[in-house]
Amino acid sequence: TMGFSEHNYRSPLVSRYASKEMAYNFSDRKKFTTWRKLWIYLAKAEKALGLPITEAQVAEMETHAEDIDFAMAAEEESKLRHDVMAHVHTFAHCCPAAAPIIHLGATSCYVGDNTDLIMLRDGFDILLPKLARVIDRLSNFAEKYAGLPTLGFTHYQPAQLTTVGKRACLWLQDLAMDMRNLQRARKDLRFRGVKGTTGTQASFLQLFQGDHDKVEDLDRMVTEMAGFKKAYMVTGQTYSRKVDIDSLSHLASMGATIHKICTDIRLLANLKEIEEPFEKEQIGSSAMPYKRNPMRCERCCSLARHLIALLADPLQTASVQWLERTLDDSANRRISLPESFLTADIILSTLQNITEGLVVYPKVIERHIRHELPFMATENIIMAMVKAGGNRQDCHEKIRVLSQQAATVVKQEGGDNDLLARVQADPYFAPVLGHLDNILDPKTFIGRAPQQVARFLSEEVRPLLEPYKAEIDVKIELEL
Image (cartoon, rainbow, N blue to C red; front, top):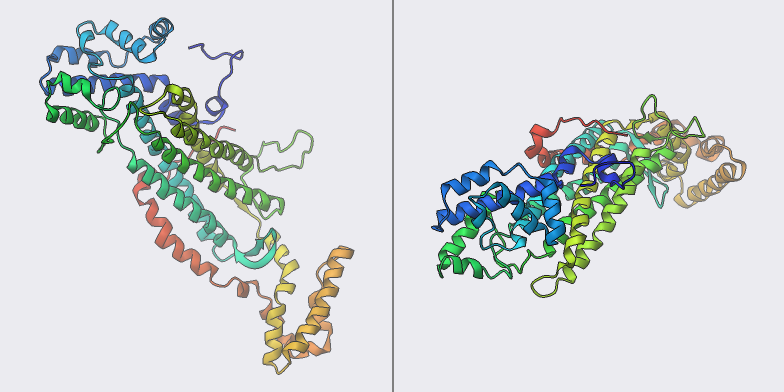
């Protein structure tokens, strides 16, 4: 309520990065209007099940659902030291007729926990189409470069060739796992429903004079009004805090995926093989005018690290919920739940921007292959020599000696790899000289990479995007 001023701390997650939808999802406006909706659902269901609540009382609550006097609520809370009661009083103030029945039979967690579950659900619904868009953009990239040979790296040392598109499929496979995880976490969320102070529904059993069926009906009706198919059958005062672990662990896992992808792009940017998009006016460095820093990927890595670190919060919170609950979950969850979703939202939007504008430099990639290929081709040269009647061991020894000499030129003298020139100059290799060009065609070193890309995209990736067809083409304006 302090208002925005340069004298107050503001979370950079919201002030610098997050989308309007996600920032709104965890806003006070959304939270407290949801509380009021929950009080309305409760009153409607209680009325339908025969409690003395009138149509006029429900209508009055509906009329005032949106007009929240935040100043009054803040003042009430400073007196009462209780956020839920402060808002009950504030709502009752503009609903004098309904005042006696607002929050009837409920505990604070009826509004608090159920609202959190709604925010988690809506948060997943904001993230899923964004993840689908990243997967879509990267699929197009993988398809386009399915056959472009590139140096593979193990231990960040040149290894056998792969293709640019095949490498992108390694990224896509992780993102596809994240997609399935997020969908599952979204589907598994249930409502806390109407359970009373220690989860026994005692207050409602009393209200309905011992009618167990009506208590069950009440729980079911409110759950359906809130748009959930199921409620947790047993709760303490709160829904199990393990639910928060489940939701946030999948976000943290996605953070690890995105950190890996963006680190790969940063490594490739150093090699000048691939770059993230760079605006015409963008400045890479205040000191070095030539710099093109992978700042978007760096931002993703930076925030992904925070997303991963946040998982420690719900793990510890769930572990210390004594018996039916303790309130030491509250302050922690006010921070860890919204921050996880806000952070996930930002890195997905940033990654969408990156994947829409990745720049590939085939000539640089080709040069790097040329430097390493002669060494990789030695096996093929040996095979060709044996076919032409040579002895494998002799040939192996000849090539070993020439390779060592070429390696010395590269490493000690800083020269180019001259192994091929040495092979061509050695009469021993005369029988295969006519085939050297074929033996050294990079396309013959990429195995089934292009076929793997095609099959993986059609069988595993594209089907995942089906449910998000309508939202897939949305462009985002990235605020830098």
